[in-house]
Length: 587
Image (cartoon, rainbow, N blue to C red):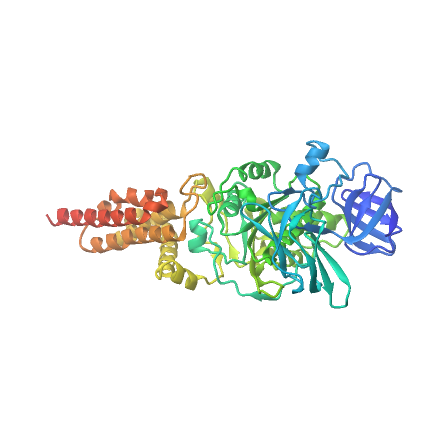
């Protein structure tokens, strides 16, 4: 264990001398306050340390002690429903120990050593096990069964295992390894956050992560194990979209990282999630959620660690065979922390002052997502989907963080301040967003064979509307033909009745795929039938003002138990009103 003394303090950067025996990325304790830091650069016997706590008042000559281990997270029962800071300290336990203000140098273990969990074995004495094999389970919450796995690098025969109540550090099994030595297995493992957890094989992501948000599922779907970015200016609804995805996405576990965003937004999450009911189980959403809060008023260096802590926890649950969704809000604040540390280290700045390695660090983070077959003999399949918000200054996505992110992710949900000002939420711009995952085959076989055809037609109408809008701005609506005016009306119906979704409405907040398909069918049926009757001589003004359009617009608020009945009634009503119009025209 290397010991040294402080030579220089520059904000969150501390330079210590006498650290020749220390290693890169070792965790160190700085000063008599024992602040947590991590070595990020070594020159001779001088180590540059990024300190994850406030460094005010530190001075040269104070002691620095290396722990000899990299920054690691504790993985085991007790993660779900917990709220951690950027370096996995449990905030609720810290508040109980030191009050509402976060004190420096607080040393509280991530997982409680006092709480006992009921361990149920799933293997027997004499069974052969290897890294990744499940040896037992713990009912962590009513929703999540925590699977206790053999840690990486261990293989052998089960010598002892029994059911009972244990703390996370108690031995639940003993494995006799191939070299004859014995290894005690506890319910907790440690894993260095900067190293991705191993797996057997990475698979192609070919199933959608259903979110219940119509603009996402229909037009720009993300695959399970996929990566997506949500860039957008302030006030365009990034955080609300991420909250919606955390609440409704078809994931077994949600890891939400509040990385450098405003504290009051994170407070909303902390207050809201325990109250929300999981749509699949009816239990509290916190029973399948891990929250990591490192807001803008917390130490800047810990932002850099927080996303690694979050994704390591997410990988751990992926290895159990779960579908995990990770929300990072936002990677721009993480990149700003990188820029600040890079400036303190006096590195050569890249574009806009960001370090030259910004793109590679972002890639390392996003590449840890995926659909994989984990370690272990049973070939469990787990997925980790990563959705990162980007907050470009002034909404300019040509800046380095947005551009580096776009080169990595395959789904881009571009938020538009103009849509937000028009109160169109989610404010995802359908003309600039895209998804490179080809999931049409899945939707056609699992929802309806016309899904991809309807999606293509909807995108075609929205693109035609954008082109026709330019003509209307130049020469006015009267210059358009009747069929073009009908096209504009159909596109308006798509925007207002289909893409617009109310996150705070009890029914409209989530739309299942069956209802999404019926909503598409209604809007397109109106367009097709109206076009047919237009060609039969019915005037465009009457087609636009059909009373049934109110029913089409309100279909989004219909309870899912009644959607098939109401759909058929609305189609009948549409045909009846069009027939009546034709009779009047002929008369």
